[in-house]
Image 1 (tube, one colour):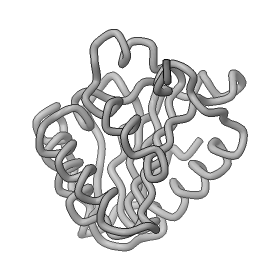
Image 2 (cartoon, one colour):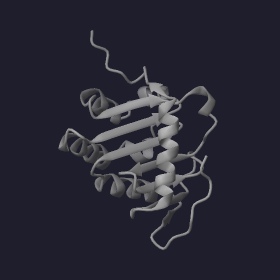
Image 3 (tube, one colour):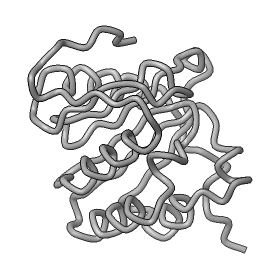
Image 4 (tube, one colour):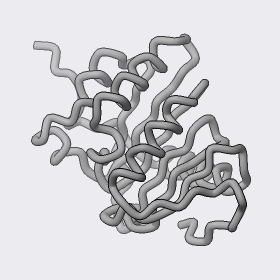
Length: 166
């Protein structure tokens, strides 16, 4: 797990739900090709608000090549709480994928968002909205993306969030 964040002048620190939500919305609004999210659950503060859902919907519909990949340990709470990303994912299945992590990775408690393999938002502890974000291309975003790809390669499609065609 990536724990060290290099200090850079373009890095923005945050220490509240509101600040992290604003930075996440700003990052998602700048996405051109791919949005990747990793966390214990599909985070309701970062990904369940009107601005983000609208941005993700517009982003997913923009091009055949746009991708949104969500990786969480468990989505049952998201389903119970009616997370607004879930119906969007069910409508846009060719653009939005939701997977759950392999059980051997479920001890990882960080949360991160990587946009276009270049910019990021990172919280070392998912339950605390204390971390850093950088909207400029940088090496730490590439490290997080590499970590995401490794976790994704061992994950499986989430059964809780699939659309049931009855």
